[in-house]
Amino acid sequence: MRTLLKTLTTAPGSSGRENAVADSFSALLMPYCEKIERDPLGNVIAMRRDFKPSRKTLMLEAHTDKIGLMVRHITKDGFLLVAPVGGFDTKILPASAVRIYGKQVLHGVICAIPPHIAKNDKAPDMQILCVDTGLAAEKVSALIKIGDIMEFETEFTPLGSSMAAASAMDDRAGLAVIIRTLELLQKTDLPFNIAAVGAVQEEVGMRGAGTAAYRVNPFAAVCIDVCHGQTPDGGSRDTFPMGKGPVITIGPNVQRAVSDRFIFTARSQNIPHQIDVDSGCTGTDAWVVQVARRGVYTGLLSLPLRYMHTGYEVLHLEDAENTAKLLAAVIKDIGKEDTLCF
Amino acid sequence: MESILNTLALTPAPSGSENTICRTIRGFLADFETETDAHGSLLVHRSGVGDGTVILCAMDTPCLYVTYPEGGFARFSAVGDLKATPGMAVLCENEIRGIIGTDEKGLFIDTGSHSLETGQWAVPMPSFYKIDDDICAGASIGQYAAMSAVLTAALRNTSRDVWFVFATKSHIRQLSPSFMQKIRATRLVSVEVSSANDTPAEKTVFASLGKGTTLRVKDETMLSSPAFLSELEAVPFPTYREVSTRRGVGGTVQKAYGGIESVGIGVPVRCCGCANEAVSLSDIKNTADILSYLLQ
Image (cartoon, rainbow over all chains, first blue to last red; front, side, top):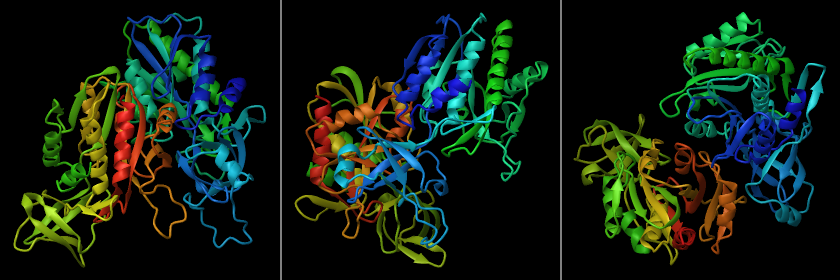
C-alpha cells in the first residue's frame, strides 16, 4: 500500500491536467485489467480481466485529480498571479513552495508578507497572491504561459510505521484502494464485470465521474474518497479517528441497501469500520454517479484524512488496506448470489 | 457582421423568453434547415466530413423578472449578472417602457400609467451605438456579439460536419444539454463573453478590446481540453489565453452524456453587466474567422 501510494501521490495531476496520474493509474491496473481506455474528458476506464460485454458491470470509482493553481497573469516583473483550481484555504498558501509545469518544470515560492510589516493578519486574497520564480521577467515569459499549472512542492513522507503524508492523498488513496481491491480479487471468479474508474475534475465540481458512469452504465457503483480525520484541535464533529477503518456513508446521496451491505459485511468479517450520516450532498463523485443515466445504486467509502487540501495530507495506511478488504469482501459476497443486487 | 450585430442587439432576448431572438436568428438562417429542442434552443446542422463539431453560444441575455407589481411600479428580481441601477431605461414585455427607480425598499421599475404583471420580463433598453469605426456599444451587446460571431460562421461555407447551437436559459443556469440527444459530435467550441478590463487605471489586464479572441483555459464551469486549446493557438488569427472567473455555457455540454472534448473561446466585452456594454467589431469578425477556419 505504501509503494502504491508513493507512486500515485508523486504523479502530477491537477484538475484538467490529469494525464500523468492517469498514466500511473493505468500502468498499475495493467496486471488486473484487460481493457484500459481514456474517454474525451480524460477519465480512465479499465475493465477487470475476464470482461464479457454481455454481463452487468460494477463500477469502482475514485478521482485522479488534485487541487492546484493556474497561472492567470504574468506581471511586468515576472511574478505570476494565480487562480485556484479546486478549493483552497488561502491561509496556508503564503511561503509554500510550488512546482510549475511550464515548458519545463520550474520551482517557485508563493509570496508572503513577513509579520513584521504585515498590515493585518487576515487571510490573503487569492486575487493578489503571486508566485516568485526568482527568474527574470523575460525568462518567465519564455517558459511560462497563462493557464500553466502549479502544484505543491512536497514529497511522500512516511510518518511512523503506520501513517504517511503527501500532497494528493485526496484522492490518490482512493485509486490505491481500487488497485488493492482488484489484487485481492485476482483469484475470484465473478458473474459480473468490474470497471475501475479514475475520474477527472472532481475538485472543480465533480465533472468527470458522471460521464464515466454514463459510458460504463453500471448496475451499481462504489465511490472511494476521503473524509476529515480527527486532530486534537479539530473537534469530533464531522471528523473520524484515524486507523479505525473505512467510513461507510449513510444518507440520501447513497443507497441505503448498499450502505447496509457494507456494514453487515464489515461486522460479520470483523473489519474495522465507522459510519457517517450525511444528510445531503456528500461533496464527492457519488453525487453525480448516483443520477447517471437512469440512476445507479451507489455506495461511498471514505478514508479519514488529516489536513485535507494542503501540501501534506496525512493518511493511516491501515485504513486504506481495510477499505480494500471490505470492498473485496462485499464484491465476493455479491458474486455468490443469484441476483446482482444489494 | 455589423448589420447582424445591429439587428440582434435591438432584439430582446431575456433568459427564459427567447422566442423573439430565436425568430430573428432563424430569419438570418432562412436558407438552412433549423430546428428547436424542447427548451427552445436553436440547432442548425451543416453536413460535412469528419466527426461532428458543436459550435455553441447562449441565445439569452441577463434580464429582470417582475416579482411584485404596485400600480405603475414593479419590484423585480434580476437574472444573470445584470447590474440594475437607478436611471436605467428598460424595455418590458408587451413593448412597455420603463425606468429603474429606487426607494427605501429597494429598486423598482417605473412604467408610468402602464402596469406590469408578476412574471413579466424586462431588459435594459435594446440599443446599438457606434463609438468609433471598431467599437460598438449597447445593452447586453457582449452576448449579442457572441451570437453574431456564431451566426456569421454559420452563414459561411463549411466543409466539416458541424452543429451550430444557440442555447436558451444560460443566465438562469438551467441550460439543458438535451439538444445533444439530436447531435452526433465529438468536439465542442463554446463561444463565451470575456470580461475585458483594459480600463485606464487597471494594471493587471486579463482581456482587452481589439486584441483578438480569448482562448479560455478555464472558467467557473469548464476546463478546456489542453490539446484542443493548443490547436486553436495555432490558427492564423490573433488569440490570447484567459483564465476567467465568469461562468460559461460550455461546461454543461462538455459533461453531457459520455463527455465531449471541449474548448471555450471568448469575445472581449467592456462594462459587462452594465446598462451598456462595449465590444470590438474586429474581435467579433476574428472569432467568426477562427470558427470558419476550424470548420474547413
